Image (cartoon, rainbow over all chains, first blue to last red; front, top):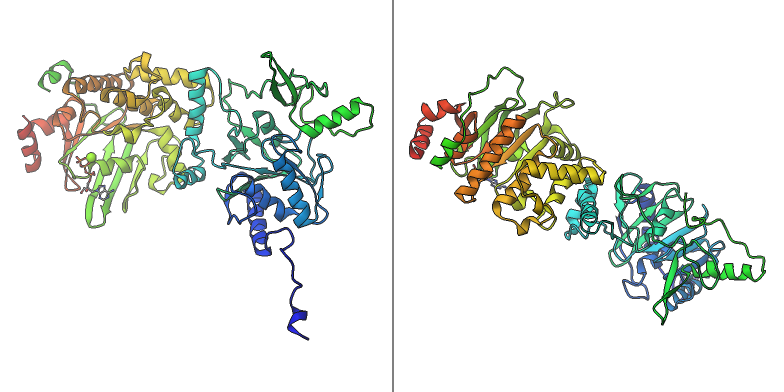
Length: 303
Length: 271
Ligand SMILES: Nc1ncnc2c1ncn2[C@@H]1O[C@H](COP(=O)(O)OP(=O)(O)OP(=O)(O)O)[C@@H](O)[C@H]1O
Ligand SMILES: [Mg+2]
């Protein structure tokens, strides 16, 4: 027997790009995050061939979850075809042999930054959210070690205070994306820059959501069938964006989250923000037998 | 200060037959070599104002901080007469229980408003935060209760959404007071609440405190090194020196017939 026989054959990189010890650490941290829903678990964020702040947290989580049979969808601002989304998806195919898809239903892992797809996710799917800033308390407490103590104490009075003062000042709550939400009645999370429209999709969902911030080195999770409650006053109902009545000018579909497209004449048109959902609607309109799963919202409402 | 004494009616000391509202036994606390508080007992009866006087460094604030459960002594026990806590030494509560108990049942006004207020938030918000911590989630109710509490503290209502950092010292103390009484505390702790204010403002804030005390029979512990303030407010007085209680008794007794040499010096220096 020679030394060569005992050595693994040379390869340009490990399967899934990250080395095994990095993946092992992340898996452990993910399990911890699932065990303590909403708790921000610190992890040793590794170098990946992408700048911090561009989704490296999501990337590391997905690389860790990857297996050769994975089918991966990547969304950026709701779209599958942006440069960023395409290159991240290709990277998964290259380093993990994953199958690429734009179809929410076919994906086993969905990595996203700004949106949760309109079609309902299933128990066998995992949503990975890229988080730029995991700390909901940052606005009220710049010192992160004190913020951590506040989480420990469930000391969220000041988060409520911010909402109280928005109501006093503007008569409504201004907080748009990253709406602070209580997970499992214990930890308040920042649900990444998803709109208020999407926060409700996390509540008692069938799927697992992993939220990962590469620059801040924090990972947290919303396990399936877990309560996620946006912070709201009893007498001021939670409002999602006013997109109920908007119709997509391409697919003619109404009642989903839209992108607003300003026109030269000052008016605006709307198109579905979930781009592949729109593609499927158009193909169906053209007579193709396209399968579209149940959606979280129906006629612009979620019940 | 002399004018103040004439305007505020003196009242008869209360009979102390009731169960104490607050009782501390054998409290000792040191900071390294410094023995800040040494074997101190404190008893405060419902609706009573206990004044604590003593020179700088005598341990008054340290004692008050322990009453507010901000700090734990090396020795001693602490009981408040609360429906569900009567049997418990409050120093054995865990961090979370302490925080909740403090939010619901103890009010405090510090000399330095930065310790008691979030200076960058609105005044009404500062009061509302107390109610939010205690679990109130109704915006209209928070709004009206914050307003009521500020009104009771004689805070100018047209300024309730101004930030404390834009307010005068007297107004800041009124915000602290409104926050402290918002939940009808079992005990209101006041650490030099008017020290540092102009004499005229000081008199007005004391008037408010006096009126609140009479209307609501709030149990208070008032720390001051100003005998004038203590004389105006307190039913009973405790004199501290170098961490120990050297004398205590009804306010009239202490002021008219001080027994301990140190108290005699204090009273005579003042009068
Ligand atoms: N956090 C601390 N660390 C170290 N020493 C302290 C601390 N707090 C208080 N001390 C010391 O304990 C003693 C009592 O201080 P305390 O602040 O209770 O006095 P005080 O009676 O409130 O005085 P003052 O009238 O000046 O406010 C002092 O010697 C003080 O230096
Ligand atoms: Mg002091």
